[in-house]
Image 1 (cartoon, one colour):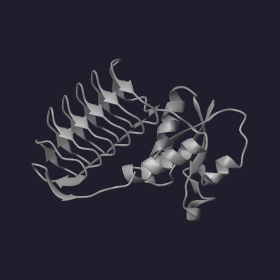
Image 2: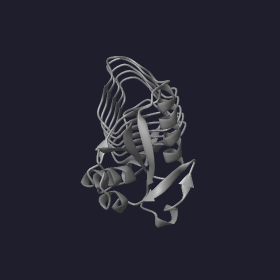
Image 3: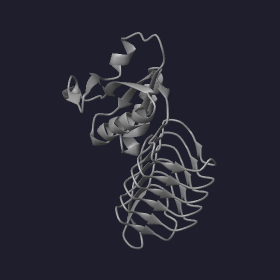
Length: 219
């Protein structure tokens, strides 16, 4: 089996460990070594049967006779991009983790480092970049594009030809109608209905969704 570590030690990381167990229940693929987390308070803990190994220094200080794979199981795109950079510097190899229950056409194109959780449906000609997290029970219509580092929370529905920019966070039960574009590093609040394009670097909420503030990041 291939060796795997999960970056993060929060709730989503524990859910991803469960996802790995479900993959292994169908076909033994992953030896999950544990979690990598930068918060020293978590070091040495055992979460759902898997240890928090330490920070990235744990990997630098050890020799492995085979590649170690990883995904970044942190929901926030802002945190995710920096953790991914550190993981790459440590020589980790990114992989995709896709739950066995996912319904996905043969015309879906995936980058690497993606987490596709249980119950998702990905239609035809969907393009997903790198380090994207799709939480359970989302629906992605035809020709949807999701760029790097974005996160879809539970029960998001994206209609056909929707484009999600880099580093977006789409809240639980958000609905986006066909042909809409959401600009990079924007946040859509839970339960929003997006019927107009959303500009970059903003937070938008409501029915219909409207920007309520703008922000900047240094990524």
